[in-house]
Image 1 (cartoon, rainbow, N blue to C red):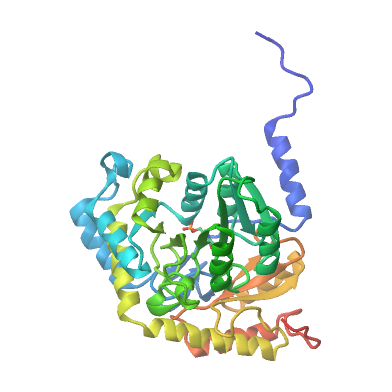
Image 2: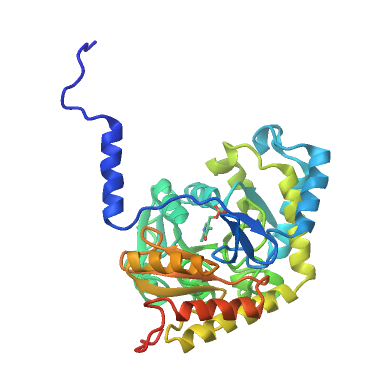
Amino acid sequence: MPSSPDPTARPLDALLRDELAAIDRAALRRTLRPMRRREGATLLVDDREVVDFASNDYLGLAADPRLAGALRDALDDVGVGAGAARLVTGDDPLHERLESAIAALKGTERALLFASGFAANVGVLPALAGRDDAIYSDALNHASIVDGCRLSRAAVRVFPHGDVDALDAMLRADAGGARFRRRWIVVEGVYSMDGDLFPLDRLVSLARAHGAYTVVDDAHASGVLGTGGRGTASHFGVDGAIDVTVGTLGKAFGTAGAFVAGSAALCDLLLHRARSFVFTTGSPPAVAAATLRALAIARDEPWRRDRLRDNARRLRAGLAALGRPAPGEADGHVVPVLLGDPTRTVDAGARLLADGFAVGAIRPPSVPPGSARLRLSVSAAHTPEQIDALLEALAAVPGVPNADPVPA
Ligand SMILES: *Cc1c(COP(=O)(O)O)cnc(C)c1O
């Protein structure tokens, strides 16, 4: 046993402080900031009410008292914790009911719950793809997809964002079934930081032509796009043609958790193989009761989707008038304002917060270097007056109005 300390070793905290200093120098320092959600798309920040244009509460359900009521009622019945993994003793009938309701919404044979969208992606990809496979992954895919690809040990081919022709070329270059056992294409339905859609109709025909399987992360479209909020595949008329769909419950549905929807065989295999499903405690069953309520409200109140689109159109038209047209659909609910420089972006976010608006000030690594941006997200809970007030505030933020616009 060595008895004297290594004289060249530095204390861990000194190393960590160096790394933090480098983060500071790159203007990429982040901090937590407690705030509380209120009804009406508002947040209490330091006892001040601000309008929330930063969350993913697209249907305005997160603070809906009916969800809280469903949660409370269920808590009296079932208590708080699931107590164990679903496969042990943590499988409550409420989990099963929620999975059936999700499968019905998505039009699939079955659905399987995960603790979060992050857990779903890092579980699903390694459960399906292995060493002898290839995964074709969009360059702007979420961090959890990137990590899922890595954990799978498959060959990962990253194609330029949204570029179906480039993807086709890669699939051709790798053709000859002997090269890979199976090939998987993974994309998002609606891109979380850009708000644009992946053309799933083209994806489906390409995958068919090349004998590849499709995985779509529909985190930002579940409950929002397509017939009755079925998602991006329904929007593109290819419902039922996607092999694996991942969706979250913490965004449009306003609660927490996530799901995979697909065939009975898919969900059955995931129940054996997805490590983030097998080796984790079941989610609190009462949350499933709240989510069931959210699904029912999303189904019975289609005006929420209409209002969301109207609000998005209003915000996007106003930005175009400022010379900052946002990429994506004219009624897309995720609205980026590209500023490029991280310091300018953080300053713009701080100024808007002082004016009473919470917006996302997004920097690398959430987006590629040089593409820092404000991320504005619209909700059905916003009023037209709140959107007009945000536009007025944006018009006064240095660097936002653009006299010399480039086409989006
Ligand atoms: C938010 C998000 C996730 C993670 O979902 P959580 O339920 O918040 O863990 C996964 N994928 C995409 C595309 C997302 O936007």
